[in-house]
Amino acid sequence: MSIEETRAVWDAEAATFDDEPDHGLRDPATRQAWRELLLAHLPPAPARVADLGCGTGTLSVLLAEEGYSVSGVDLSSEMVARAEAKGTGHDVTFAVGDAGDPDLPTGSFDVVLSRHVLWALPDPAAGLARWVDLLAPGGRLVLVEGRWFTGGGLAAADTEAMVRATGRGAAVRHLPEAVYWGKEIDDERYLLVSEA
Ligand SMILES: C[S@@+](CC[C@H](N)C(=O)[O-])C[C@H]1O[C@@H](n2cnc3c(N)ncnc32)[C@H](O)[C@@H]1O
Image (cartoon, rainbow, N blue to C red; front, top):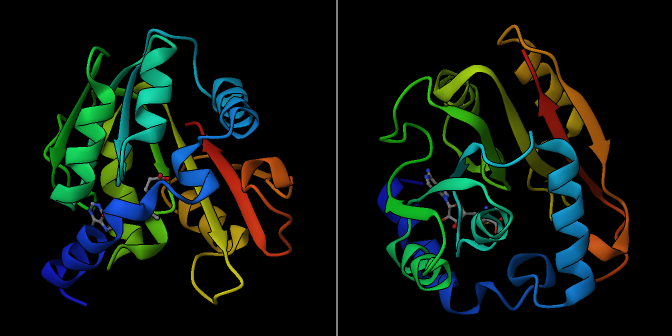
C-alpha cells in the first residue's frame, strides 16, 4: 500500500476511531489503567516524549496532563485535527508526517512512544532505527504492539528481536488484562520498553 493509500485509510477511520475503548479511553477505569501503565514505564515528568503515529492524540494528551512535553506525529490529517482539538491548553504539539522518518530533531527525546504503529510501517526495522536516533542519551523506547486475532501485527518475540538488533535492551510486559481493551482478549498484546 502506498503512503497516500495508507493516509486515506486512516483519514476514513478518524471520525469513529475513539469509539474503541482502548483508543478513546473514555471509560475512567480504562483511562486510569493506561495512565498507570505508562507512568510506570516512563521516566518521571517533565520529560520530552515523541508519540509516533499518535492517531487522535489520546496517549499524547494523557501524558501532557501528567506534565510531559509531547510531540505527536501522524500521517492522517484527520487524526491530527482531532488530536489538536484534544490537546488545547496542554504542552503538546501535533504534526502531520511519516512516523517512519519523522521531521523531529535527532537526539532530543527522553521517550519515543508508539502504540500499534510499528507493525504497519512499510519497513519496521528502518523505522525503529530512526526512532532510536531520536532518543537523547539515556532515552527509552516504549512500544505497545500486538499480534491480533485478525492476523495483523507483530509477535512480541519478533519485536524484541528487532529492537535487540539495534544493540539495545528490551523488556516485554504482556497486556492480557481486559481493563486495557474494554473486553476479554486471547490474542497477544504487549508493551516493550527498550533502554540502552
Ligand atoms: C491503530 S492507530 C494507533 C493510534 C495511536 N497510536 C493510538 O494508540 O491511539 C494507527 C495510527 O498510525 C497512523 N499511521 C499509520 N502509518 C503511519 C505512518 N507511516 N506515519 C505516521 N502515522 C502512521 C495512522 O494514521 C493511525 O493514526
